Structures are given as structure tokens and as C-alpha cells.
Length: 209
Image 1: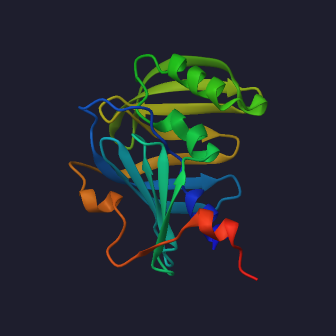
Image 2: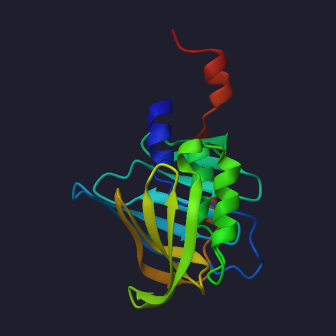
Image 3: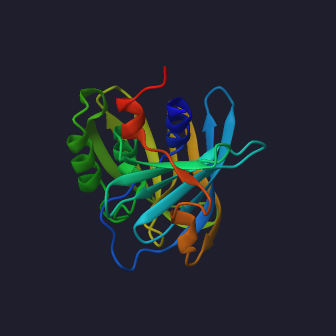
């Protein structure tokens, strides 16, 4: 079950810093295309200080909800009708690049995030703005950066949503499609009715024999 939770949590490509009260809320399809040609589509819901990412395909395995005001994650396991709450893990922290960057000057924020992760392989060694562009019909600001592992990424930021619209690197592409702006229901970010809470600490302290 813990493996399932980790797999669901790995859907998280985005995370948050502290948010401005005027942060735009929206939902969208989050499409990841890998260099092998495989495509994965998830649904993302973004509120002022929370985000929900859920599987979007023939088999829905669950969802992950991040509460950025409290640095916690909630993993929803659909098949088991259970959920669990855990501290925000490193994968979510490393994805802060995507959340609410300043489209006019994103590099300082990204450099601070990279330094806070303390992962020598993924330090940001260069970053610069390329100029204005359009992604899927939306205005965007284009950036390029490289990390200490030799990877170079191109990133497009939506200045209205203050969110990354698209990213391209050696592993593939990520982009948001079918964006719908507007307030998101609070129920999306709460434990589903009738679901039982899975206590991770208790299971680790008393593993099944």
C-alpha cells in the first residue's frame, strides 16, 4: 500500500511557495510526454494555497493533495477508499519551480529553491529570460536554465496564472491544456466522504506479520 501511495504521490509535478491572496485559481489537463513517446495525462486543480493532482485515464488510482500553508500532502487511494496525510516529501519540494513564479524575474526564485533542496546533482547553474511567447493560445514568458547534472530546460510561465504552462528538457515535455479559470470547490482538497484515514506511523511501528 505504501508503494501505491508513493506512485500516486509521484504524479506531483508541481508544488507551492507561500501564495499571494490574489493568486488565480484554475483547473487544467496536465500532459506529460516522455522521450520514449509515452504520454500521461492527469487533472490538476489549483486553489489559493492548495493543489490537487489526480490520475486521468482508464484506471484512476487516486489523487495527491498538497497543502502548502502547512507543508503536508494528502494521498487519496481510490480503490482502498482510504487516505493518508504525510509531510511534504522531497519530490514535491523539488517541484516548487512550477508554482507561482514571477514571470518578469523568475530566476532568483528558482535559484533559491534549488539551493534549499541541497541536491548537488540538481543545482541551478544558469538561468535567463528569453522573452515573450505564446503557449496553447495563452501569453507566456520563456526562460532557459541548466542544472549541475548537465540538463537544460526551457520553461514557459503564464503571467496571469503565475504558473508554469510548459517545460521541455532532455526527458520530455510537460504542458497544461484545457485551462479553466475560476474558483475551485473546497471539497477537492479535503478527505473524501466515507474514506478511512490510513495511519502511516502506526503501520511502520506495528508492521503486519
